[in-house]
Structure formats: structure tokens, C-alpha cells
Image 1 (cartoon, helix red, strand yellow):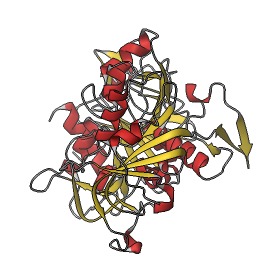
Image 2: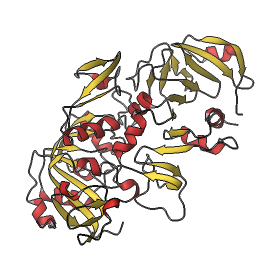
Image 3: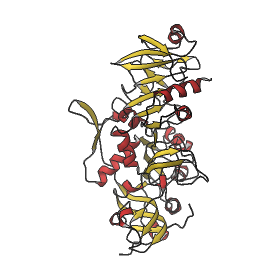
Image 4: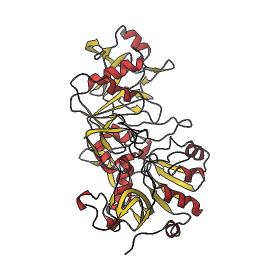
Length: 219
Length: 215
């Protein structure tokens, strides 16, 4: 199966109202070419799952600024004032999720779990509307799985089977997101033939990756 | 010595050789400037590595700290993903987290992530850190424009309930001991009356009140 595809082909999978996960931490490790493709495709009413809403002019921030996001499920919006403005004006819904809980909720969806129990957020507004369970005398919140229609992730290097290797702190949410979407598209800087990556060094197994685009970005 | 330096020096004196430490953005990052001789700590960066250090040579666009600023990784450091990063935080593998505070109260509650209607940046990793780190040190100036920040009850949304281990300000050091706020140290030249005047919370004065360590 040929996983290598083009921006045009990937764009055909985008639709208004879909839920999209995008890797990155303050735009580092975000698949910029795929985010731009999403923006240029014109789709809107997106539910966006990611660590943060980056900056107005980079990362997933451009989706917010161009009003493509109906709801953001993120841990931090402080670096993109437009997210705060749209939230306050009631133009966009923002669900703030503790960063570790966000990662675990995505893992839960991708690992066949019904949710995770965590003490993070107990006694804070994060617990509102959530089931609380006491296990061996300690209180936990039941945090439910988070799944997406499409995950857009970024890696440094891939082979044609989709096996991925990331660069430095650009790894962040990318590996876990590869577990938790119906369609997983990896944007990579460098593509090599099958067999050219050392299996011991692969960080995300290729079976999780449906499509690959080569960004050719010098980053 | 200004307030920030006093706070950073005192927090640094609290760290032990071999500690894994997460430093919040702002004042807490000053702590590494004042580590006592012979003390080596490993800094955890929530975006996915241990061994956080200064930039070496040219900054690399893929290597940033939790504030998104260029960073370095020291020899012996390790890169990982967000899941591992927060398993380290939530699983009790981080010995100390040092965070700023908007409010702390006498029950060990901390509020530092939002001011409703004004500032809603999001909690990022702060709620995970206060829930999971073995020791939670709040490093902050004692008052904000003269108003106490150490209160009977926080009135801002909490970051964590009953999570604070220690409060370090430019005036004093408090510890939460068995659910009670205890004044343990005073900065040079500061008396109990001064601390009381700037503190809304009720606190106990430790029987062996000392001068602030590490200065």
C-alpha cells in the first residue's frame, strides 16, 4: 500500500464540522504544510484538539484567527490572544484540559480504554460535570477518551511504511495522536526507503500512519 | 538583593543533590542561578525532555522550553513525548516543582492559572505538576501592589487543592505541616509583625524560627 500522498489528496479528506487533532507545542512539532492545507481547504466549524492554540501567525493559531474553529480542546491559549477574544465573545468554545490529562485522554482513545482516573483537577473547576471515584481512599476524576476524525502529525523522518522518528522537543503530542484518529496523516521532512531506518530507533510504528506527505521544510 | 533574588536563592537552597525539578515560567527559572556548590539537579521540561539547559551554539527550532523559547539539552538529558513527560510529572517522578502564585491559602490551596473575565491563559501543565510532584514550592512576592497573596481562603479558581508544601517570599518561608500554615524563616531585617501585616492567612510561628537560609 502506497502511503505517500499529496496535499491535494489529503485535502479531499477534510470536511466542515470534523474533529481534528494537530501535534505540536507552541507550534514546535506542528505540521505546518498540513495546517495550511486545512486552512486553504476552506472547511470550518472544526473541533480542534491540541496542546495549545499557538500564536496568531503560526502553528494551529492561523485556524483560530481565520475563524475555522468552533471548539478547541487544549491546555493553554495564553499565547494566542485571538483565542481568548473569541472565547470571551462567545464565538468559540474552549475546553481547557490539564496537559497531562489531555495526553492521557488521547492515549485512552487510542488504547481501547474507557477513560483514565486521575487526581489532577480534583477540587478545581476541572472536576465540574465529571464523575468522581474513590479508589483505596483517594479521589480521582474519570476523564473520558478523546478521539478525532483526522490526526495531523509531524515527524523528522519516515520510511515509506510510515515508521516515524521525531526531532528533539518537536515530538510532544505527535506520537500519542497517531493512536487516536480514523485517519492519521504524517508530514515529514525526509522520506527514506523501507529498511533504511533502524527498527530500534523508530518512535511511532508505521502501522498507525495512513498517509505521508513530505514537507521538505528545512527546519 | 532584590525580592526576586532573595526568593530564588532561598528556593535553590531547598534543592537536594540529584533532585528532578520542574521550574515554572518567570521567577522560578531564576533558581538555577543560585544552586549551592556541589548540588546538581536535573531539570524537567514539560514539553518533553529532561536535562533542560542553556542554548548551546545556534538555537535549534525544534528545541524549546515550556515557554516556547529556545533551549538546550545538557549531556545526560533525554527526549520523550508528552505522555512520558506527564507520566513523569503525575507518577511522582518529579521531586520538586517550583511555581509562581496569584494566591495561596492557609489550607495549602493554590490559585495561579486564571482570573475570571480577565486572564484565562489555561492551566497548561500546572494542575498536573501540583497534583503529581512530591514537593510543591510556591515562589512569589509576598504581596501584589500591597495586597496580601497568602490568604485565609483563595477566591480565584484553584490550580490544586491542599497541594502546597512550602511558600517562599522575599519576607518569609512558610511550610504546610499537618494542614497548618507554619512560619519557619524570616528574611534578614524582617520581623513577625511585618509578615503579619502583609499576610491575610492565619499562621503558626515555628518554635525554632530562623533567619532565611541560602542568602
